Image 1 (tube, rainbow, N blue to C red):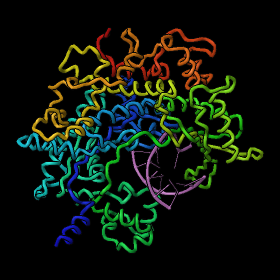
Image 2: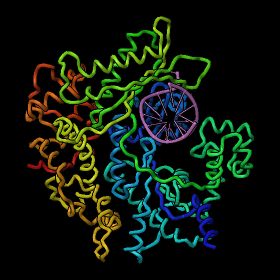
Image 3: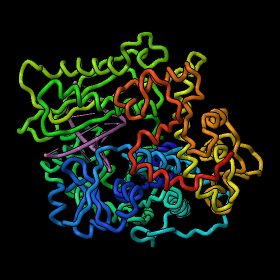
Image 4: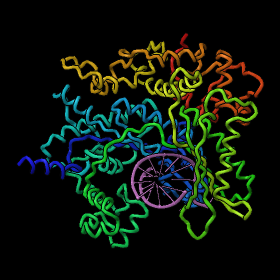
Length: 581
DNA sequence: CTGGGGTCCT
DNA sequence: AGGACCC
């Protein structure tokens, strides 16, 4: 009785309909960012190129038959007028990706990134709040519905998914209005289905899946390879078992599958094949590793290796400073030339590094962190490659791992400062992303700095608002439905972080991320120079030298970005607010 | 020259 | 440290 009931729930776990998951996928993401940087490209066939590969292209180019992941030469043949932009440096894409994720976090703290252009959002809680506070609201589905809905599930998922579709619509609207990015969205009761249904209407559309459509969706997949979780290797194994269609996977004997793939994977794939997935949306936090790679034709001299690594390290240090944490280890990766094994076989070595390299107050003047790291890198390289014999590399990578949060204690002022800079840049995103909302209601948006924290309000609120009484004034549900009419800023409270960030701003109406170096104390200047700016070519770029204190204000972002990139930020931030103060 | 990133598991 | 997976 009771046992049977529980059993039913358990075995049903992966296919129950209790959650509402939205999957958002930016349309041809890199190409979109490039078109934001340079709007003249919008009407032209545009491809983004990494080395000899066209990693994505806009929809104008797709009309010529150009596809993702084509060789550039093939794409050019199909579309001789194709405009190509280089996309090896992911910096701008990463920044836009961060803004998108921050925007989505207004709806739920459960946001999981997949690559730079996709996000899963678990909106179950927001849906529940909406249904509770708005039980008379319309139950229209926004966007497409996948398959038929003639038979309605009676567990309440119909209403939940309807509200989910409305939330997804609002998310896409805000992404478009505030960031200029168009997305597709899929709404379903688990991650697998949300992702699969997302891609059924492209571009810039959304689709909702109800239980009645699940079977059709799964069986309409062309190949087992279309299932997220089945990659190159697994699909080859399946192929050898004579399995290529989803239906074959659904019907194969489980024991047979376990023998080929192992129990864990076999059981997972069996469930996936019928649309069952109990994976939770795991909030993406700080990355476990931060790395850069460069592929090339041939490197066979140690000096070339060192040069490459130095450039990589230099760029890496910027990403590291923005992250704000201290790495505990560094890893070097190489790919050796090997014409037999096509597949990218890589070898790597890693070693721990002393945190003192990143702490304020590095005792010695002559050797900076950069040189020590480069030495470590070359040592690791020698562990992989015996340079007394000829070698031929086609890729070099450097990555930091084993991160440790920077000491927040009273110990170091630098830790505070560096932390603030990263907070500041996050807040800058928020400022930009909020502006669309602000502009619609309060034309008197002074104090732009004070409004910046508000995107995080809803997560904070729902937690503390477990209040019993009928004063659900500010639920997340109210927020997303009323966002066009209501001010987001009315409930803002200043946090210490905000104050500190404000203090770092220039008083001349410069962008929020400006830092006036001359106003920082000598100690802080020194520490910043030491921990972030010790790279020779970087200091060149910034127009500062080792023995002169810069007397002009500098913007970290502006100086590190390309000109083209500046246009993007200018455009996105162009209404960033009156020259306040 | 089939990219430049990431994740988790073994 | 490598291998699978994701984009």
